[in-house]
Amino acid sequence: MLIKILGTGCAKCQRLEQLTREVVAEQGMDASIEHVRDMKEIMAYPITTTPALVIDEEVAVFGRMPSKDEIAGWLKQA
Image 1 (cartoon, rainbow, N blue to C red):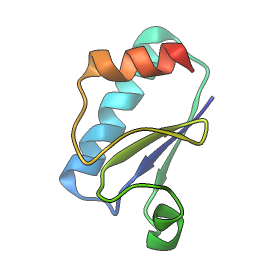
Image 2: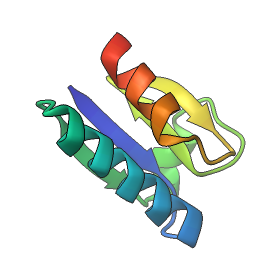
Image 3: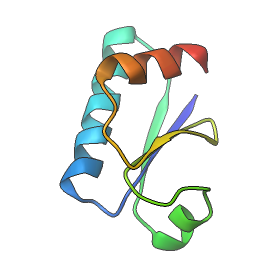
């Protein structure tokens, strides 16, 4: 599973990455996590605001901070 955090490095983007890493570790999932900070790469996704969470190239959420439970649910479905 490939997980991408889209964001330039703001506090919310960093928090989303931290929460995602915690969920992956707690669930014992086999996943690769990338933090995409390049605006050209971010603009390639159908989002209007950051932070965004992308799971296997599908945008799960953008523009808000999801809960750990929401992140866990999306990762389990992937």
